[in-house]
Figure 1 (cartoon, rainbow, N blue to C red):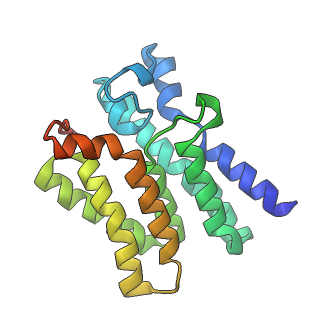
Figure 2 (spheres, helix red, strand yellow):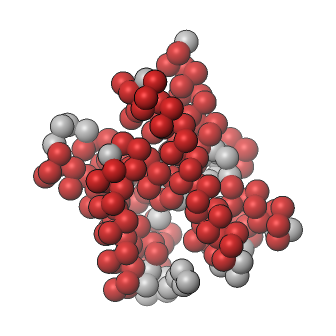
Figure 3 (cartoon, rainbow, N blue to C red):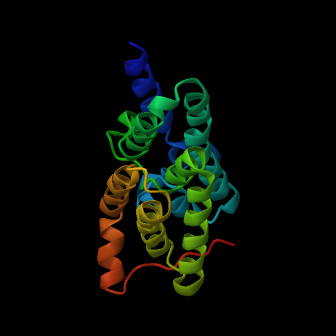
Amino acid sequence: MELGFIILASYIMGSVPFGFILTKIFLKKDIRVIGSGNIGATNVLRTGNKFIGYLTLTLDILKAIIPLLIIKFSFPEFIFLSSLSIFLGHLFPIWLKFKGGKGVATYVGMLFCINLVLGFVFILSWFIVFLISKYSSLASLIAALTIPIYHFIFIDNGNYYFFIILFILIFYTHRENIKRLINNTESKTKIY
């Protein structure tokens, strides 16, 4: 009973589509027909409203942090299961016919709850790649790949398999970006 509730509550929290909700309320637009059609913060930034874009980013991070802090201090043995449920909720929200975001912001929130160092490793990796390339998608992919490698080398408690699974999911959600990167047609991102 307890485990089922944790999985369901985590999934529902993760599935709240903040990018979709905020652009609908404040811009009277459907984010799914703008830019890449994705509901995440990077695409919300393409609307030209940076406040809504950064608010989406913040809320997508917080929707992982808030429930995971509760789990971490109440049911620490379920932290990875809850994390995966939140992540899958973001990628496949029931409210939007299972078509969600790419998972990067939610992943960042998860990392900071699981291990602060992993969160900072991700952010540092992302910024280095982004400053060099100006591609948010490439920065996200490389930062996501950095986490299981870092975990394996420096932490190695067997949980790096979890981060490999999350990298594969992020790779999957970025498959169109990868094609555009290969074809040199990917859009560069302005974050300021």
